[in-house]
Image (cartoon, rainbow, N blue to C red; front, side, top):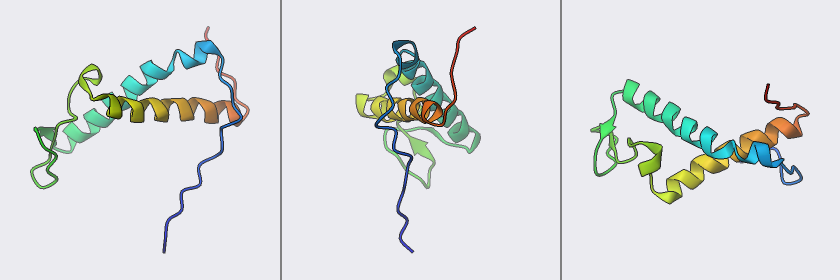
Length: 94
C-alpha cells in the first residue's frame, strides 16, 4: 500500500501579523518537545545521526540548529496555525 499524505489545503488562509509573530516561538517549542522525547528514548548528542547508537546532531538548542531544520519547525508551526484558523477556530490573547 502506498501512503499518500493529504494535508488540509491552507493556502487560502491569511494569518494576521500577531499570529505570524507566534510562528518562531511555536517552532522553538516544537523542537524542544521533539528533543525532550528523543532524550527520554535514550538519544544523545552526536556529530552524526546513528539510529543504532541513538545519536543525533540535532539535540542542541533551537538557536543552534541549522536554518534548514529551523525552517522545518517553522513550517510545522505555520501550518498548524493556518489549520486552526481554517477549521473555524479563533485564537485570541487575553
